[in-house]
Length: 408
Image 1 (cartoon, rainbow, N blue to C red):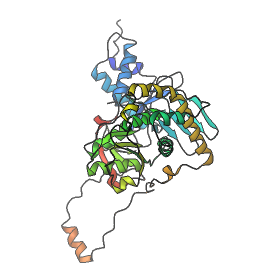
Image 2: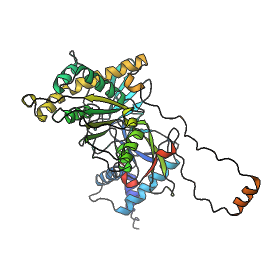
Image 3: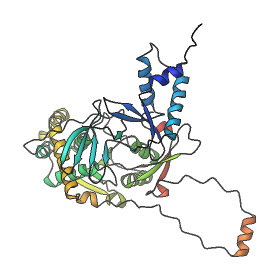
Image 4: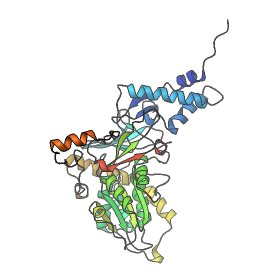
């Protein structure tokens, strides 16, 4: 008697069994996929990263890739399990923690993170914290303390004044705080003053990426898409930004909400909060709007004489040698802030987001006769829009399609 042939969907489901479905507090279906002996990465169920991982697992057992139908069926199975699961975990990008502990994801395949407390910092496996990887993320080096102050060498390398170095160092500490709001760093100066080089170095120090400079946004939706995909936003050579784009930057620094639509959501989008550190470079003549200026830390650079300018590759190689010591010094700064429970003024000056949504003003009640007349001619009610997440003003909600999510 012949044995019935197993379906490809069943084979793919068995191959993907190491993945653990769970959901985020806002209801998004995720899967924790192994990234080491006891560590996991968190990826959205309907993302290209999860599909690629399933194909890799399937190819390790069969000489051909799974079909599209099997992939869709298994994704739907994991999404259903995640939405009904009792496992609820927040998912972070690069940094997590709170007022007593900060955990920085080193990224890469080693599954290690940097755990910072008031007693110092050390490396540990990220067993109980879920980070969402990105296709453009680069790993952070292992922090190594140095006898000499590495920020003094960085000041000499990038030709910074003592005041500019202090502002950059405090902004870096603020950018690694797990929760916003975040100050906006504006680096301005004339041509050939090293604005882009400084911006690249600051980005590489805490959030290295294969594409460190974010493309200039033309719309509000693009700003929120960039904020949802990564940790830091870096816009270079800003000369003019549309008012709606400036509105979006101000909201992202303080906290905004976007709506995600996913397959199988039944037409009910999910509201997700975003809050990101922002870095802008501009010429000395660019004047930001008042609401941007109130959230900003400004660093002004002077032009570098042509005889003293250095090739970018030479500066990058010198920075790479300083990177482990710079990261260790920055972690020591964070440990000191956690111990003293006092953060730099650059962090405290940012306007905090409201604790609850602001309710619209109530209209005056109609007389009884007018109310009856209005009731008799009332039109059918339109669908009620989704409620934004707590702490975000309803005007900050902007829709974002599933196709614009990271890893898709």
